[in-house]
Image (cartoon, rainbow, N blue to C red; front, side, top):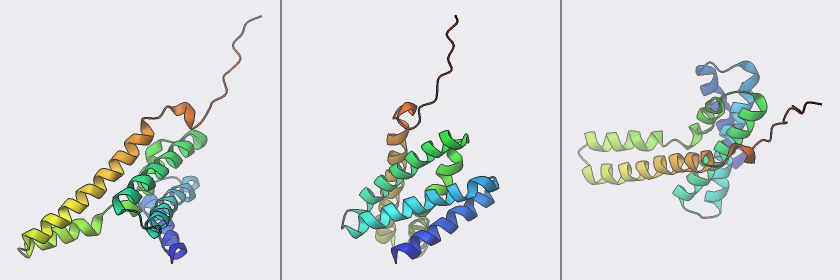
Length: 149
């Protein structure tokens, strides 16, 4: 089941990248980001860890992958990051929160909304944690020999 879900996340991330007009050469790498996010999330959830922890670690892994790909492929980090976090975004929970508000079930709307904010915060914190690391940790560029004889 995990293999099927990661394959669906791969395709969904590619479709979002196509919608965002990413170049053809980068589509597979955008899909790898989504596949990494969903795979890490599923593995951590399978080991009975918390959902927020799973999202936090998955977001950090996708951000690290996006930074590495951005340096190697000479593209902006957001090209890979936005497509990579799509499987983690709590869109259905946000829908359920609004549905509960409309149905006047305010307690359930509050609980669903709180869970949504926790997951969205975990995504943001995971991204910030990796972006706080220096760029040299992800890729060392060759320095040109500028010594004059």
